[in-house]
Length: 298
Image (tube, rainbow, N blue to C red; front, side, top):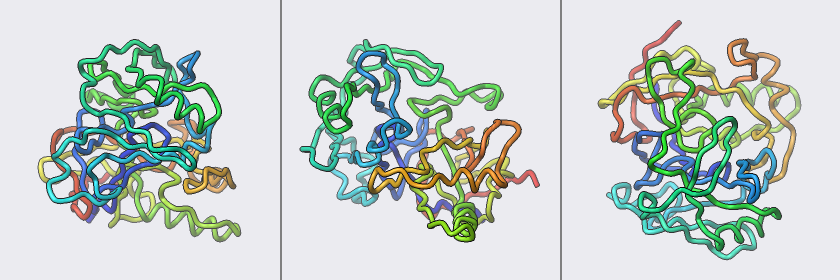
């Protein structure tokens, strides 16, 4: 029986995540205390082009947390329903930066930004935040927040009849990987004389246990407690898994091992994990340890 092994929220695209014991299934991915996955993003100050660990691996060292959480992944009882006043952002050698949470809907989205082939206006978080991120990453940047009035939909060629909204994720609202798939990859890395990789290299939102290696590829749906999740597209991998998330240092890229057995003709890439969307259950809670009923396509 598939069971949720862990849940992860990434408030700032390509920065460190927050591990959670529970999360809300929002309209555009996971949410926690009213803060959405990939709700913020760093962009070039001049062009508005988005920035990730592909260009700036030290982004892995930038750690957001929500004020009031006792620690990342350690929410007090009832805390998941209490909106935080601010998001604290920390990085080595930097004073803590605090970003106000409330009031986004009342602010004007005025900065043009580009994320892959999508262009839109976003909310600029101001000069203090821009200076903080620019100083740490050594380039002129702006921190922007997704405009809650804007709608960015996933590719309907993959989602079909489902309109799946995103904020600043690469293309789909939720990424799922099974624990067994990572174990299999690590066995293959060991056979090649390489070190095992932790799950955070692949930046999933949901880690699934109780299934075999790559069985997530054969899921038609996962359901439970009024929730239905549907895989819609295998996840083609970029070089970010080569970045050690605790140091921001680029090491060997596991894509060469994955490419030996995980090439996918449909996406034209090397795949690991599944992009999933919510069919029903928006507003419901997902919890670590929660069992989900699978429908398979074996």
